[in-house]
Amino acid sequence: MGTEFNCHFCDVCNGRGCVGQMPGMGGPNDSRNFILNCDAWKKIGRGPFEARTIDIRLAPMTGAVENVGYFDERQFYFDLVGECVKADIKVTIGDGTPDFKLFWGIEAVEFYKKENPLLKAGVFIKPYPDKKMMERYERAEGIMEFGGIDIDSYNIITMRNLVHLEKKSAADLMEIKSFLSKKGIPFAVKGVFNKEDIEVMEEVKPDIIAVSNHGGRVDVRAGSTAEFLKENFLRLKKCCSALWIDGGIRSLKDIETASTYGADGVMMGRPFATALCQKKPFSQVLK
Image (cartoon, rainbow, N blue to C red; front, side):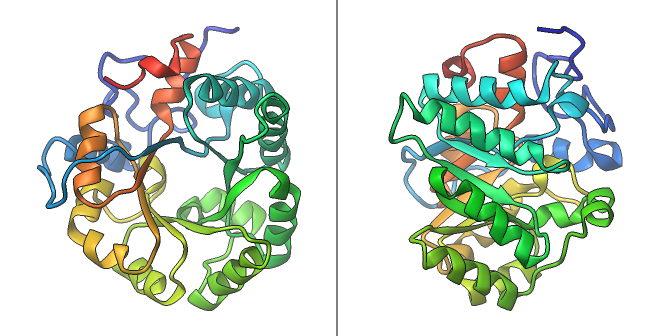
């Protein structure tokens, strides 16, 4: 394995060691929202619910070579999924451009499914034109735990222009939900991060809502996912069966805090990617 990773493996991963590094592990606006995501979990205090055990999932990650500095894009997915399987971490995969980023993620899950027949993965697709989205869901159908749409990726301006991402309306999302429902597959919407998004969720009522600002890697309003959850969890929980969150989660205490605001699951990306690069067991990521 190569050693020229784009992560600096800081003692504390809080966004300050990779400010503005894109491609890389940082984020836009001097990593503003990446830093806010991490800091907020220490500030928001406990919510009104009792702390409970909730799901921990790998967040959808692509761009292993340009962003992580991994030696091979395809191998990244196989290694990442394999370590999740070992540590009993639930898996989600995402897509990107070129198309092989999704296909290799699917292949990795299919590979480990041979020895783990019950293995499934959540699959998040970017908001392409409908025909392309449906084709991708159908390609992933054999491994899908749920089918999701990554609405926050619309804010990646370079990708939006390159592959024609669309801002989906409530009606558009309801069509996708209906398509998946007919196959018995739950529907997830990832990227809820403003009041307009909440209004759309109240109309669509997806099975799963994931509060996210794409790990602080998209140019959206300033703010943290933790504070957004705190402000809006009661409203969000009324329009979904499961509420998830990602962004800046680094410890078991952060996960416990999320659970007290009604989160049913968390997704984590950078901590697992950096553990993989350092050859650390995923079971030791959270303390």
